[in-house]
Length: 200
Image 1 (cartoon, rainbow, N blue to C red):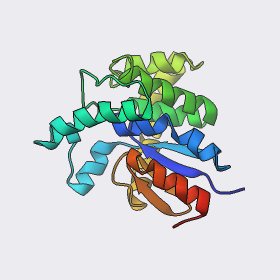
Image 2 (cartoon, rainbow, N blue to C red):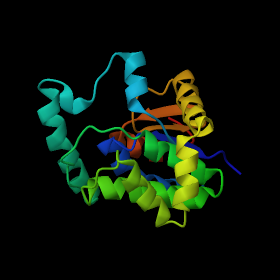
Image 3 (cartoon, rainbow, N blue to C red):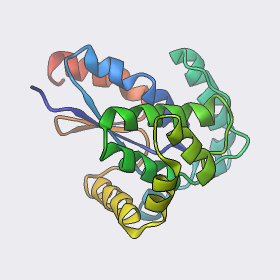
Image 4 (spheres, rainbow, N blue to C red):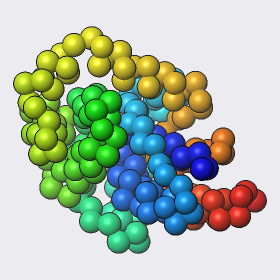
C-alpha cells in the first residue's frame, strides 16, 4: 500500500483549517491515507524568524481578507476568530494523547477543534474548552487533565515539533507525499496532480 501523506498543521492556522477540510477526501481519491501531525507555529517561527501573518504590516490586512475569500472558494464555513493568533499547545497535546489510544478519534477531535475555533468562535487556547471538545469524543476529563499536566505529554509534543523542523517543516499547512513537500492550502491542486501522475 502506498505511504500515507503527512499533514503538518497548527490549530491556529486558518489555512491549516481549510486544508483539514479537504485533505482526507483528496488523498482517498488516489488510494492514500493521511497522518495528521499538529505542530506549534510559535516554535517554528523562532527558527525561521517569521511571525503570524496577521501581525505583519500590510500583509496582515490582506491575509484576513484572503482567509475568508479562500474559505468561500473552497466552500468551507469560516468566521475569523475574535481572539487571534492564539496558543494551541493544549489542543496539540490532547490530539497526541488521543492518537495514542485511537487515531480516528484523534482526527475527529482535530476537526472539532478547528471548527470550534473557525466556525463557532470558541477560544481553543483555553484548556477547559479543549477538554470539553475532547470529552465530546469520549475522553475522560480527569484522566486528560492529569495527562496534560504531566511532563511526558509535553515532551511528546516537543519531540513532534522538533522532528517536523528536522524534516524542513516551516509553516501550516505543510504536506509531504513520497518525500515531496507542498506548503499552503493553495498547493492542493498541485498535490492532487502529483498523486494522480506520480510527480511532474
